Image (cartoon, rainbow, N blue to C red; front, side, top):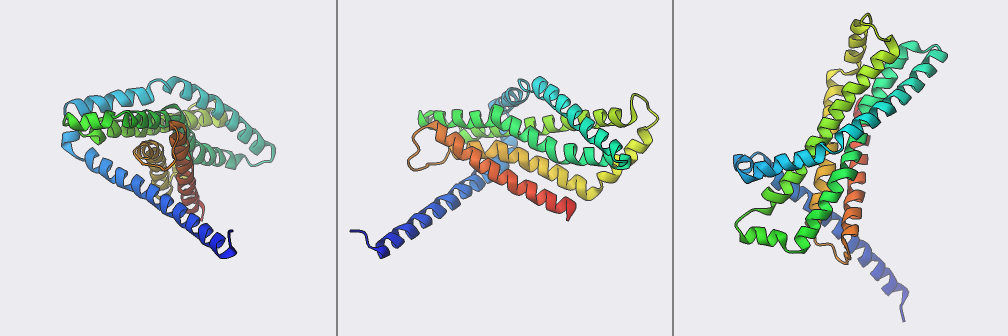
Length: 268
């Protein structure tokens, strides 16, 4: 018979074990991230086979999704820009149209969209492949052959995803700014000077620093979390689906924290 005291004790122990697993999971992410940072700065990681692996994964992470993402973001930008500009004109707020478009699209939506796209198209699947390789003993075979699995398997996948996010975000920002200029000033060069002043006023040093840091942290989050989670030993993990789910949940939580911090830095 279960007494109230024993039930309370079991509940407390369950919460404690859950908190310990949560802390252990994030510690594993930080530990793997620190190891990868050291390997990235090590010259030996960029010689021979590891460099070829990095280049291959950069191509796999970037090339297949680049045309589709670029086209999708161009269409999305056209729709959002048109809505914002027409609404601003209708309410006599023309002078705020450019500011609103740049802040909404370039500062907030584009880095988030690029990170989520790479996460869905590449990094989550890459984490699942890494978990399968680890489960089947592939990482142990690499160690037995004298190779470091972090250098030959994990680091190339992480760097490939980071590069893909940064490239897609940069390309989308350029497209967004060009489309915004056309929507506000039309196909003429008469508004280039005023457009540059307005964009430069928005991207002051503090905002630019926050934007760059946020985009980079988004890239690191979507690249690192699925891979680090694939290297963890999670109790009662029945399949690779739970690996993908675990990485996705951690990724969304971390991206939410990063986004909140950037909003606080930009607007408070």
